[in-house]
Length: 226
Length: 222
Image 1: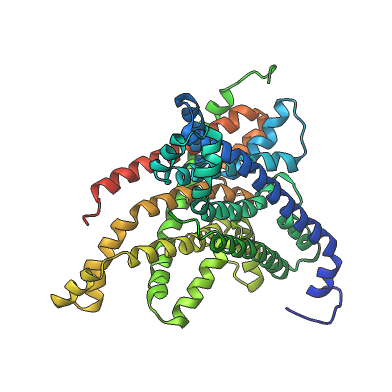
Image 2: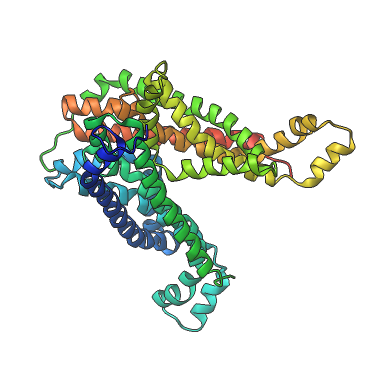
């Protein structure tokens, strides 16, 4: 299987031939993951704060959104977004349809995690912050979020892993990310096991790095204890 | 959207197909969960055995599954096994194999936590009344562990059910695949995907409610 002679048909030769497709696939995977994580973190934070402190109708609305998105498979979200956006006259490339769908999914998860983390901060903290005259934004910014941060970190990193894994689903709507570029390479040279193994190793590498970074951050912020 | 006219006839004409597809997905999830529980239980015991040669491979297995996209695993098993002359699995069986291995990793973590949370006194008490090692597990540890882990098991069933949507990628006619086919044939985009989403949502909700009832019935006495 692992012939090192660099002849056509050997893994090393074919991998070298396919290096640009695979690297661009890897780039698309990373790009869509990073975009999704950024969007989901921003929206998820807003939604999470709304879930924890919103007016009742806002809470109900966001709760409905979160529960719905958590009950629908990501693949269905992606296909729905991909085919559905065109109906609204919005012609976005498959890449963006995928990023929107993944972000919608990840936003729900981040929001729910943030709500949990924020509500785990003892109520006395909020009251004390009120008592010293901080406004709502300041109470969140200086008192609640820093304390909730550490509890938010592990599920946030998990969501990140889910997003990276979820980008493989973009292959279904024709986004040439790592999985689809691997499939295209395999379709040319039939080195099925070798190239799927290569893709597996790349995903493992990305995710292990994210997990390690998460653990590092957790240690870094371990002083935030209450 | 302004000019979109809903035509739900597409859905009622395909209602049988959609329901069968949903049931197929549910079946795939349940079968995978059962096999996954067996794998997970064995793996969890290996993990808490305290022997490195048993626990290290299990840790590697769990980390591997947790960090690898399910869709990649599905393709790997489906297209890769024939390369090793394993050709007797059809696509449904190969999907069940993949999803079971996937579920096994998650279940092993659930059961490991469950085993770890059982008070030592239970085992000591079982020893004191003269139960043999396997009897201690069978009559004391496992029943308590299952009750403790029931909520996590039901969460896993729900996510496995959602994961069966990936079977569409290897053309197993479950709900996502069927919805996509109807979508391609009729181009009633909104009707098809709203229906599919609602069917997934309602099913997840029903599973969650049923399992919560079971949880209450077997609420752990601690």
